[in-house]
Length: 164
Image 1: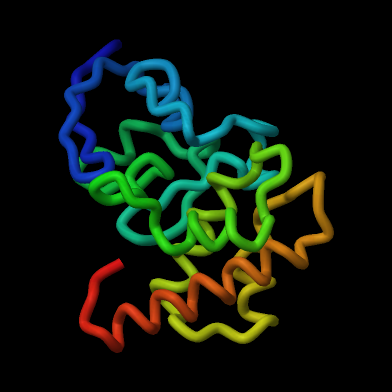
Image 2 (image 1 turned 180 degrees about the vertical axis):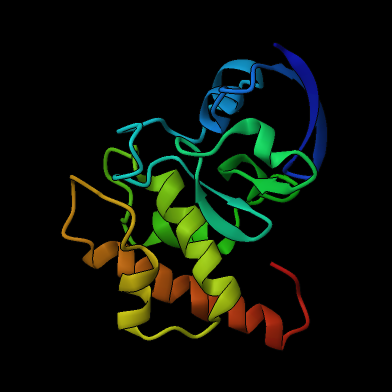
């Protein structure tokens, strides 16, 4: 039986008609046209569908949309502010950590969850933080470098009293 739920995504409220079995990834992409979150394996193995729910990284391909009512969802579209890329997004560009780009939104979201929890992560912590995300184009060196650079930029902003 279909029902209307309210989802809070990227600071906006959406009333969405769903079926109880609708997955968050499908609601985001098909019903709300938020296509930045990619649909990869559909089994929770690749991390391309990573979003943040209440600040925690979550696989949208394994999450029922109905379970997200009353929670705060952040997708890649919600990372930029007033037309400016988030430091994590810019660091991925600057460090050449984007190749085909398919995994990038999920990687960025995992990096955000990591840096929100650990503002100055070690290389090992960065590798653990993105370990649920697969990239078929790189050896992860540039991705780890980008996360490290984003951490430096975010810390500099924090020291200067600026928000990210």
